[in-house]
Amino acid sequence: MIRTALATMAVWAAPAAVAQAETTSATIAPSLFPNRLGARAALTFTIRYAGVEFGVPSPLNVPSPVRRAVLHFPAGLRLDIPKLRSCTVARLRAHGASGCPARSRIGSGHALVESRTGSQTITENITLQAFLGPPQNLRPTFAILAQGYTPIEERVVLKGTVLADSAPYGEELKMSIPPIPTLPNEPDASIATFSLTVGQSKRRRARDANTVVVPSSCPIGGFPFAGEFTYADGSAGAALATTPCPG
Amino acid sequence: MLCKARALIAALLAFACMLIAAVALAADTETVTIDARFSPDKLGAPTNLSATAKFSSAAPGPQSPVTKVTAYAPAGMLVDVRGAGTCAATAAKLEAVGPSVCPADSRVGFGKGIGLFEIAGENVPGPFTLEFFLARKEHGHIVMLIYVSAVTPATEQLALVAREVRAPKPYGFGITFDVPIIPTLPGAALGWVDHVFLTFGAKNVAYYKTVHGKKKLVHVRGVVVPTTCPRGGFPIKAIIGFADGAMVTVTPTIPCPHKQ
Image (tube, rainbow over the protein chains, first blue to last red):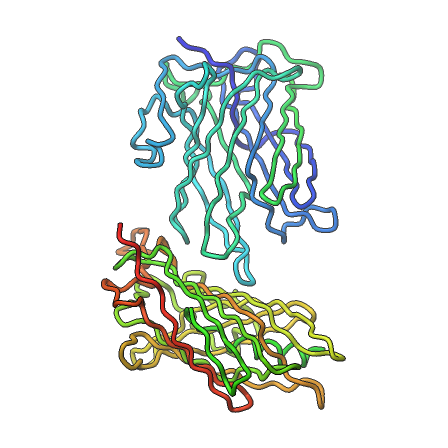
């Protein structure tokens, strides 16, 4: 059994905090299910981006495309991978999810991307599938396949590397997000929401499935999560959130 | 201010359908430079056709607004709109309600640009956007609705109708539309356009359609690059009529695709 300390992302949760960049704000919302100390669980991590106008997040403004994200995860949170299989970014780009071993898949989710084209904001729903990549310098890597179909069929692969972090966090996931092209001379698409669930709760889990393991102890105030974001316009921002300690 | 904005938009509109790289002169004063390209530029492949038109004048002061545009695409270039939706709205309704009146899958192109109009001897810029919607065919010919929107210095919207026309050799698909002249303040000059960028189609457009009761992803080929490229590149032609009676003809070319 191989155990890799966790560093990933996904959907809805408890408290979420806002941090603001010059033109784009981001909020993060992590959740664990089941939220029980030491339990094998699913982590859902949602990020929402919004354009900022007059210092206030505005749903009418398309956020700047995010280029880099660093996600921080609480100490003790880890990913349990019973049978290690990995998939390369090149393979994902060329063949999609079907080109990767099933055991390399660690999660799934969805995203919404937006682009201001003409006088309208065009949106596209994206499906996300997360895969374990080959280790780099003995550090785990992840690849997230983002596939949209309409109105523009587009496939993008996000890459992430897990590194050790400083307290109160255990590890951080550094992700690079490539430009999402739209049309010539039109701006790249921006991610508005990004929600990924890694691992599976016991109810749906196969015996040897990849899962998240909840830390065996919970710090006062709950499990801390954080995100730092760098945008295409050069601005940057951060967001903090905690998930409550198991009751 | 509103009247001026309308005049500006009218001028802007005029360039909505130019495809391409060339320079033409009208009445020895007006100059039009057009640059166009296919992306990707692969023979026989669905593509995006984009064009930038830049306008200038040797004469000082306000330029004459555009009143008519006719553009011809190269022979062999297909405009395959099967799978796309159509906008059933009239131009008047589109102008009154906005783009939401047209289904998303009827959108076939976009554009943006900068218009100018003179106030107290100063050229005031007015950015604008263009959206192209596929309308119901007329006598088997393609019809497009063009929605023009400007927000600053004043909010103004306008809708035009562009119709497919027969093109002379060596051209294929042709399209034409008129631009109304809208007066500004009494004695004031009409607005004119500085530059405009247009983009039509994409290589990977797809929409979900219900086919035999099942949801199916349907790809729209849209603009398709000709399967052969004549020596010197794909020829394009644009004829631009101005309010002062001048007529500019631009005959640029799109370079042939690089051999793979």
